[in-house]
Image 1 (tube, rainbow over the protein chains, first blue to last red):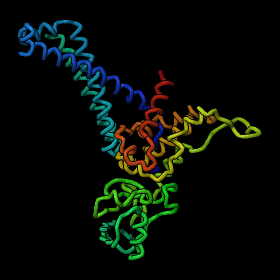
Image 2 (image 1 turned 60 degrees about the vertical axis):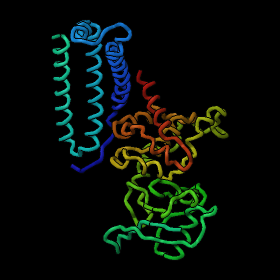
Image 3 (image 1 turned 90 degrees about the horizontal axis):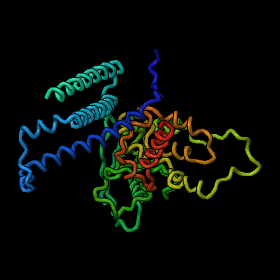
Image 4 (image 1 turned 90 degrees about the vertical axis):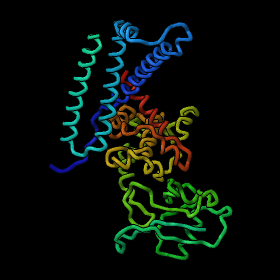
Length: 124
Length: 231
């Protein structure tokens, strides 16, 4: 086969869009958790709320809404990471065979992480 | 004034090297190209491209103190000495400051840089309203000097697959032209992880454009149009 340069895969928009949307989801989650920690830290003591302890943390994560929100955050993170890592692999790995192999391994790994995340969140 | 200029003649030199030059003069109002022409009187083996010498033709683009620009509209007084001149990065060097622009123009041609209109030609011109014409401002001024594209790491990495900022700015110039009828084909042509989506909006192109254009904004508008037709 002649070594031709081929382009025209007709995808890429969804990945780009998902990366933007997942970034917003992650930002909201990070601010929420950071805010929670600050309000329940020694700074929170001054507001009469007491410090952050194990029971509070368990309480927070027993809320099904918090669990779902965390799962949403993790899925956003994994999808975001998949697109970002794909972009890096595209630039640095020249062989299409190796590229495909890395994509498959990455997908399997991130899917396993997602299952693991569910197990952790609903195992509290 | 002190200069340090990249020299490479593939017929005689094994390796490129930097050569020092000195001009006994004041910067004044002179442009870098004027100085280069004076250096050429000292050493006529120095090769460079130039034509209009006023920032219209885009021939004398080069890397000036680490930044791409046009020698003919870069004031000598704004440059730190020794002024270091290199050919545009990321393209094969033909000789000294002259690069092979084949890959650049290949990408430019791949976006079909001409109006596609299947209607029979009218008696007079194809008219535009002032508003439709205004859409082309900031796009039609591109002189294809390649300063932006050769400042783009995505192009350095994938010059055979990524269209590059200059090509994408031109692509948008035809997408947004009210007289063009091939918008969806043009978007199809660009919807590709390499051709368009290698751009990560780092804006090196905007930083160096000697005409003050904004390829990143044009690329953003192409992406917006793609989102619009998808959702």
